[in-house]
Length: 122
Image (cartoon, helix red, strand yellow):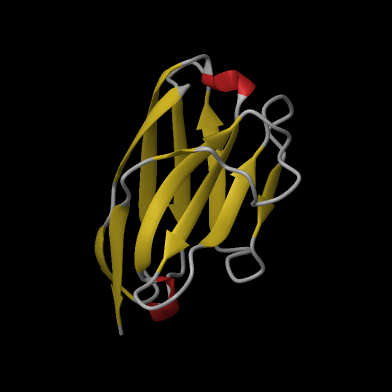
């Protein structure tokens, strides 16, 4: 299993950028599908992006395509999410997650961090 700790959240104005990081420890994280999720108050948690284990292929929710980039550094055992052109609707708690399965969907993630808060003001 892996342990996940997010960082990098904060407050930014609409149009600005933030970079989230997730430190991964425990198991060899190169064998895990990694993902970012978010949950805004009163809303269900939603998948933001995933990146697979071997070819680092990324998938994105339609709402963030072209603005967010997910990438992983296996040597440093970190996962990052670069968020550009932030909108007020991007404000949420962001979570790092992992699963030992193919990255075919946002489902079945087993390991979760505690989250990092992103606030976007207009």
